[in-house]
Length: 284
Image (tube, rainbow, N blue to C red):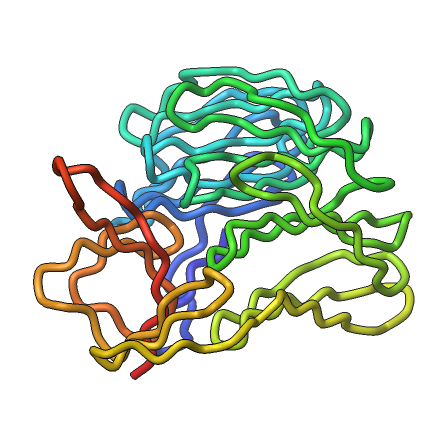
């Protein structure tokens, strides 16, 4: 693994890992970097401050994908070879759970709004939905042919799943775990990018050498008396700043004290001290 300085663009270190290093994941809560070794069936854990290897965690067969879940400070590892997900404790570096999803898990995605982890399983054409708090599989959602990559839309609490050989994208509701719509795209979609400013999802189609742009329903803006603009279709509120003392979290579940432009989740308390979470967009 090569470590590059973000300021100088110089190589700082080269870290040895086991054979066939494949995927990386950063844990901001513990300041650790994780690397799957496809041929060694383990995950190398690296101290983010010292760039030193601090552990090698044995997982399932052919680990391909990693994703950090800040709700429990765990790292999920998709093991394509045996159809399992290994859950690694972000503090102890130990496997605290093994979930069976079957069908070759290929990609992972975290839903910070509902505390769920998703696994795209190309062998059974399903997306497995997992509860991060309990490390249990909630359900399996049928999607298209060979689901290969996932993307979370924090504005609308939706998960996009690119299906490689059916040339389409399945849109999954984060609350109900139901497929809302299947959208045809280019030939063999392989990657996503979410545009938070315009609420658009970009899909890279490898065989057609094209990019499909997906836009959710925008609705209209409703002018509020306090200057706030609220989306008329129950979308996020658009604010120039957050009130002092607001409890806000970013899309990865990390608390933010001085949010810049972007999408955030704000906790508000109503009658009887009941908590309610709403999405807001800060535009400065």
